[in-house]
Amino acid sequence: MYIVAIGWLYVALMMAITEHNVVAGVATFLMYGLAPVALVLYIMGTPGRRRRKAEAERAQEAGEAAKGAAKGKDE
Image (cartoon, rainbow, N blue to C red; front, top):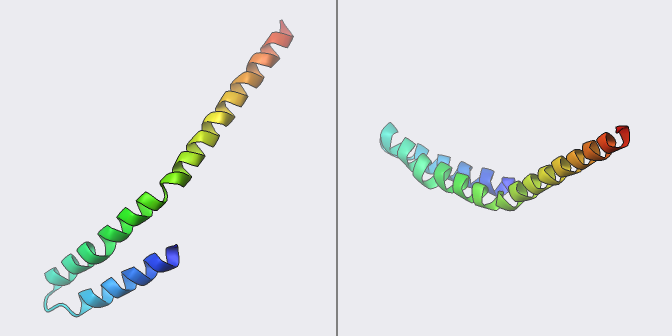
């Protein structure tokens, strides 16, 4: 997935280089390159973020359960 993003940024950079002034080049790169790629990568990364969050919550619950079980044995 990242190779497509890198390719798109390269194409957007080449488009920006052909602009007549620097401001237009920067605007072209930001609007045609960086903003769309950032949005797509953020959207495509959502399932992974949800999965990592759920795993962290399960690990935290398992840790709390283990602490509770160990505390019950001590008493």
